[in-house]
Length: 200
Image 1 (cartoon, rainbow, N blue to C red):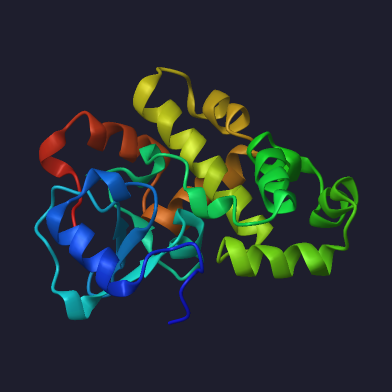
Image 2: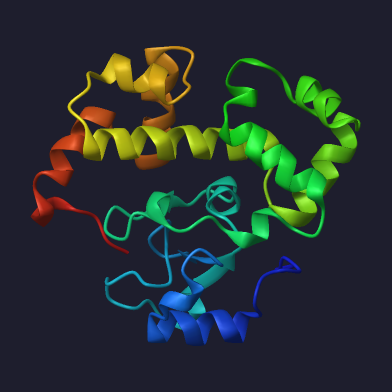
């Protein structure tokens, strides 16, 4: 695997994971091949074997590779990943705009125009610094916003869907089915029953 240049090496990540070192929380995410789940380095679940793990610089990169978030350590609550800033202010600006909903209704081409670059160049920067496309990052952020609302509010599913930036309830449900393999309402019920939480 080609590692993100702002991300620690495999050995450093592995040592931090085994120590559950909070200093690395948000700096990388651990994906477990045998379970298809990705976690924060501070996850309290039983440690997977080193041969079964791979590390990613962002949650979006782990999800782009097909992994789903752990319901125990809740990667959506990890600190803002410094790798997203990269070494270019353009990437940091793009991430800020996406976090504010720039891709909830507009296109990547529109976002690139706002940044004064081509959409192709923006894609290259994201591949280099984020490890995922702008669309994947936007999707991850929408799901993370929705997950926080599910955990912390009593809003209806429709209210949460639109507050999180989904254009429709159908897209909201589809995103959760794709990422978690279950409906948003069942995830809310799971959070109320700790014994049912998933772990890697």
